[in-house]
Image (cartoon, rainbow, N blue to C red; front, side, top):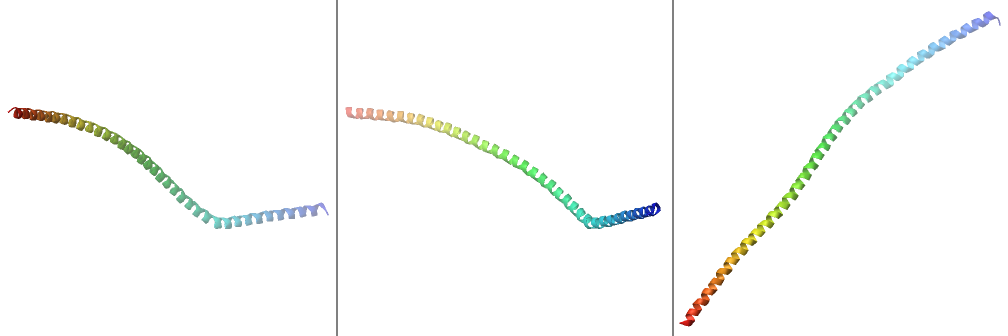
Length: 135
């Protein structure tokens, strides 16, 4: 083969390479277009679902925070009320004890007074009986 024939063959091969590259580019563009048309709607739909899911997560997190706050407040209130009950029960016991002492002291004083009066009456009876015995 001559140099000129070889150069012609090289030119043909280069031309074929260009055609192959053009064909690849065409096929690639067509494939990308087909694949994009297949997946882009799905991806867009999934992105929309993701946005909704993220909003749900955010709202749920807010609700959870609110519930945690309410739970903390309820626990504090419960503890305060429990302490108030304990204090009231102690105060009640103290007041009852003091009232019982007061009542017992009053009882003791009244009984002492009545015992004195009973003794006075017995003394008077004895005096009357002495006087009657003397007569």
